[in-house]
Image (cartoon, rainbow, N blue to C red):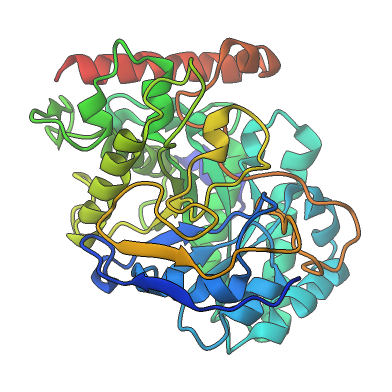
Length: 424
């Protein structure tokens, strides 16, 4: 059955020595969380120095926005699993079978099995960029990369996905009523068909921070920081929600089920909180970042799911490992890191780190897409990473660039959040 009929039915060489003790309170192997390793900066440590830092805080999975060979070589035989990325600018190329196979042969196959590459993510937040050509390339690119993996007998160990922001939702309140935007349903149904076929996760970037930033007077801070003492009740499902993160995830589950898919895994490919922001970026402080990420990691370590999926462990990648001093946009975009470039914590999350012996590097390796030699294509990488248009973060200027349906979708999501928190 095709997806539409289904829809109708329902380099300096640096010392890796780290001068810290891994005395972690929250970051333990038991928490099994992932982290985004962005590199849009000119002051980050060499990847070899990053390996023990990553392992010391209990990270078991790392997501890149490219396939940086320096990182993949450095983490060989570390046991850390990797998601590597194909940037938005390469989607039109890898939809071609020969180009897709060339990409996999260059950026994945040489590093296996020493480096545990387990997933390839195609593009980032493509469907909400208001770029019809790019959107049209997305699924064929995913299929092209998967076909290349099959031809190289790698499809059993490496899956394929793409990350969406929550502007794909038209309805988000209550979570049980979650629904995708009507103009994206067909595309998302086709992508969900692909996930069902190959067994890969549906990935979302979920940022309660942007909800608070957009409505700081109406969205309770404790609700987005996992510190609410009361819960909002979904009147349809009777489920209780004491934090926005769970509500975002379950709204997405509902939207997926509403298209007829009940067995697709959900992965949170990005979530985090900035430690610094501009004057108009409410809530961007070290203390709030510490609370959000600390409480998030504790939640993951409890190995509990959401109210709607209580028996499924949360698969979460925190954004991000380091602050990135060359990221464009507001100040917050450069301050999502858990660590400073010298390896010391931006705020206290329970580990005692004194930093890296040396942090000089050859320059930006590209966090949102590049990495010297990381791709077989010659076009420059696009900057991706955290999105300023994630859930409830669309500004008036952003809305003007969206089609009418997208703007109405954002308005619906904002109203939904206000109603949700008003029950607290």
